[in-house]
Image (cartoon, rainbow, N blue to C red; front, side, top):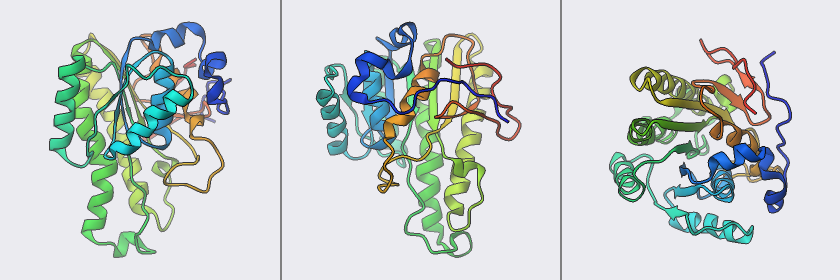
Amino acid sequence: MPAATPGIQQFLDPTAWRDHRFGLPPERWQALSGRTAWITGAGTGYGRCIAVALAAAGAQVILSSRRVEKLNESVEEMHSLGIPAGKSSVIPLDMTDSGSVEAAAAEVRRRFGSAHILVHSAAVSAGGLPPWPLTSMTPEQWNRIIAANVTGAWLICRTALPDMLAAGYCRAVLLTSEAGWAFTPGVGPYNASKSALNNLGASLAAECAARYAPADVQINVLIPGEARTEMNKGSTISPYTVVPMTLALLSHPPAGPNGRFFHRDGRHFPFAYAEAYERLVL
């Protein structure tokens, strides 16, 4: 069985964030205050919830996605929960367009110098494909999924991580899916994209640790599990369930996990040559 961090509290009421701090002890909650955090996919679902929680902890939050109206709704959710949103900034981008990502990164650099935290949550589903997609979908359909779920993740990391690492501090979490470990018929392209994202995350972690050896590099991959998102509107589970484990990773002290795989419920996963992380993260 994989290792695990016990005591991760998934089902916390976000309206009571002052009382539970999404499961973080006071010193770890304080570690997020004053950090600059860049969140992709911040207009809906997991990305919105993580952005809201980081703002509650006192971080300078940069919210990015294609739809500005959804990003503004995320800021409104902060207001509705009594979270000061004055340090939150909306910087829209298209993850599949390298020019858009580079322009957003230039704006982050101009306004904030560099981020300290990166959370990549943006993704698309395998919806709208033929029943047996791997043997009947078009190249255009394949490219759409890979561009959004793999190339987009690489583009944002390629532009954001060097600035973060040059500043000597890097906490990054890439949200994946259990599909990255699966071979379910009918969603093969999505499975392949998430498996590629897993490898990308761990490969980035290894490369950055080698290239920026003095820096505190912690780049990890997290399975957010099932919840109510635009990809899964029928779920009754709150997407805030991803927040406690995400914040546990983002607030980790130096010499923490790098290139490892986790589940929102606290389990530590192996993947390919990566063993399950052998220590607690909280």
